[in-house]
Length: 95
Image (cartoon, rainbow, N blue to C red; front, side):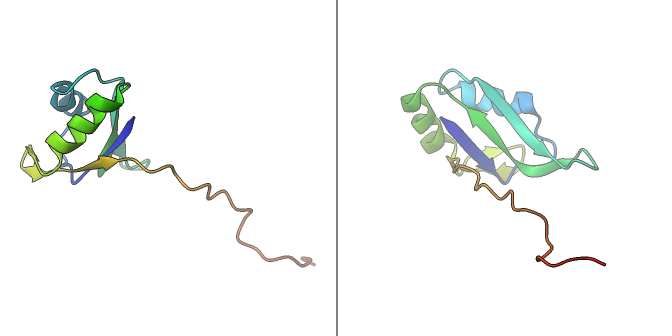
């Protein structure tokens, strides 16, 4: 199950996130989303846990908990909408 973790402080690392969630079971991956230009945390990340029961326990146990000075917002990640539209131009010819 893929878990969204929001309201992360800038000091939280992937390893911090993994360690916090491993208290509830096996963690396949834990990654913090970073800005592609600055490389700094965007304040959220994702944790993948293979066992649904453990993932649900982690969501319930970690939501609202403090990690490095911030109270986390934790829930099941929603699938990303397919936003791959074709460019921003309307039809018509360019002369």
